[in-house]
Each structure stands twice: as C-alpha cells, then as structure tokens.
Amino acid sequence: MLKLVVNPGTEQVWEIPLAEGVTVLGSDPASEFAIAHGTVSPAHCEIQVTDAVAVVRDLGSAGGTFINEEPVANARLAPGQTLRLGGVALTLVSDAPGPGDPPVARRIPVSATAGTMVAASQVCKFHPRAAATWHCGHCRTNFCDLCVNVRRVGETARHLCRKCGNDCSPVEVRYVAPVVENFYKLLPGVFAYPLRGNGAVLMVAGTVVFLILGNIGRLSRFVPLYGMIFGLGFTVFAAGYMFNYFKNIVQSSARGEDLLPDWPDYSDWTTDILDPFKQMLALIVLWFGPAILIALVMLQYHLAPFGSWGTLPVWLDKYGGLIAMATLAVGALFAPMGMLMLAMFDSIAALNPVPIIQSILRIPLAYLVAAAVFELVLVAYVAVDRFAYLLGAPLLLTGLVTGFLELYAFTTGMRILGLLYRTNKERLGWFND
Image (cartoon, rainbow, N blue to C red; front, side, top):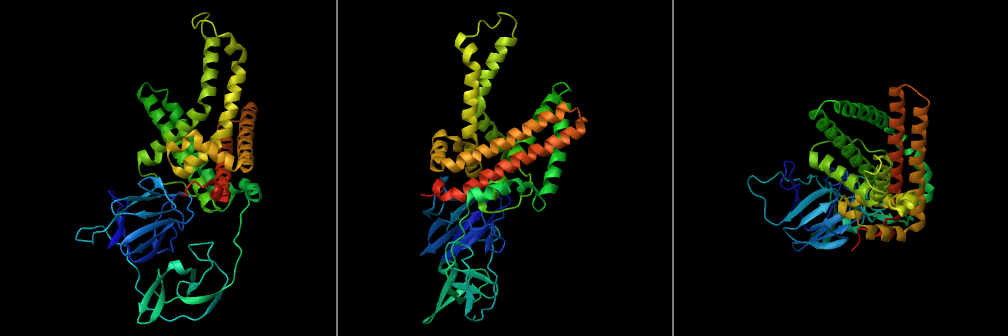
C-alpha cells in the first residue's frame, strides 16, 4: 500500500494512506487529509493512484508542487521521492504500516444512504474550473467525477464521498461562467486590506511589539561586547520574523484569501528567522547593493582626511551621483518581482535575474503598475516619517505612528504582489511543466 509520510524525520511526522483513486491534498479543514500550513493552498494538489502507481497533479496552488525540488504540474511520484507542497515535505513509501509507525490519518466510517437528485449550479470544491457532477448530502459539498470514490457492487457503480463515505447523488449541471479576477479592479482594495477583519488589531499589536524590540536592540548596543552581540541578534530576529510575515501575506493573497493572516508561529530559529533574514539580505544586496556601494565609496572619499584615500576618479566624482541614482532605479524596478518570486518559491535561487526579467516581460503593464503603486506607497511612508520627526512630536508617539505606517505600507505592498500573481499566474506559468 502506498502512503505519504508528512514531515519525515521530525516530531510532527504523520502519514496519509493513498488508496486506489484520487486523493486531494490541501489546507482546507474540510478536506479528507488537511495539511495545516501557511504555504499550502486549500486544494493544493491531487494524487491519482492506479495499480500502485502515483501521479501528482498541481491544482493551481500558490506555493507550488515539487518532486525532489523540481516544480511539477503533472508528474509521476515514485516511492522514495520527496513531494513538497509549498513548505511541507512528504515522502512516498510503499511498505505496509507496522508496529511503531507514526499515527495514520483514517477515513471516518459513516453508513451510506442513497441520495436524491439535487439541482446545483456550483463548481467542484477542489476544481473551481470544473462543473460539479456529484453532491454529498451529508457534507453538503459538490464534486466533479475526479473527486469521488467509485466502488462497484456487481453491475452497479456507487459514487462515494471521499470525506464521509456516503453515497453521492448526481446533480443537474448548469454552466456557471468562472469568475475572472482583474488586477486593476482589485488594486484599489489594497489600501483597506490591512484593516479588514481583525487586521487593525494585528497591525497595532505588531507595531507595539516591534517598537519595544527595536528599542531593546538599540539600548543593548551601549553595553560593551555582549550588548552589541545581543543587539545584533535582536535585529536579525526582528527583520527575519517580519520578512517571513511579509512572505505569508504574499502567499495568502496569491491563494485567494482576502484577510490579513495571523502573525506566524515561531518554532525554529533557522526556518522561521535565519532563512527569511538571508533571503531579505540577498534581495537588498542584489538589487540595491550597487547603488549603496557607489554612494558609500563617494561618501568615504569626501569625508576621509585630505588625501588619505587618494583622489576620487574624475568620472566617478562627476557622474557618480547619476550612476548611483540609475542603479537605484534599476533595483527599484526589479526588486518587487524578486520579492514576489522569493515569497512563492521560498528560495534565494528565485532571485536569478533571468527568470525575473522573463516574468516581467510576460506581464509588463500589470507589473509596471504594481511596482509603481508599491513604491509610491513606500515613498509616501518615508515622506510622512520625515515630516513627523521635523514636527518635533514626542519620541514615543512618533515611533508608534511611523512604526504603524511602516507596517501598513509594507503590508499594502505585499498585498499588491500577491494580487499580481493571483490574477496572472497562468501567464507567469511558474509551476507549469
């Protein structure tokens, strides 16, 4: 019997048995085997098992489906290979369960009762582009032909709900045109997004917590040696955690969620803090490093004691400012796509300039609009931040206001990037074969 071992080699290991037929994997709590993780879409992928051969098909997930770290849309999964759904690893094995094996997720046994004809105009729960052909009266859920279990009893074929085991009833299918989301129509809503639902509470709580952490980090630097190390650790923690949260915003928006996600849990220093911090650092160095380097060299030449650094080259003295501005503009143009690809692929390798440029060229107008609005929001925040300090308001009040506006600006920007992918994922084609 085939089965998937979820989180192999960790304390959170568990198993998903793969029976003959189709098994849909995702984070939807109502699904048969729910994988609760921020990078897993509600209906992430499906696995078709036929004669002990497993074939994986991605269902348009936001985080992508990978076999041995290669993105796939439809591919065979062999025993021993690693399947990754967003940030969750699963290993396919074919041995039968034995003593001491991890707990197995079981189907809920429910006695089957025959259903009646049900009129419906809905689509399949797991395949939004497919019209529903079966309805489970117990779960009140609609499915297409791929999403029900077929069991033959003599000459009769029973179509059973994969969640509860009840008989499904055929539905009268009426075509419903799929909802096509338009990026430009969704764009105005990004400014209200951070405050929807309990977003305002999340934003205020985040502002207060990070203001406290920032002040602790700054004060600790006045303590010799250990204080500086402690302050550096605080800085890495705050930046890594925040960048991880920003990636979650992009991913949740790309999945179709319209409320701000909760602050992520912290369970592992490397995965939750250090890896996001390194990704953030790589993004900054790649796209803004040249401009920063030129500016620092020019500044050092001008501030150093006379002649100690030699003479600044004439061309750099004359055009250095323009070169720095030009490289800064190039970085500002490409960095938003780099951030989007970092969030979706969760790998520094996603910062490869070639696929970034290719992706921009596939959706040039939408991307330029997204990048322009994103950066205008950040410019507006910087302007308000400078103005607040010039007013001479109390430091604590200024810190709270500017901290909130900074979080609001970046949250809005991440929402823009998530919507850009959500409305253009087919044209981008990142997770297609």
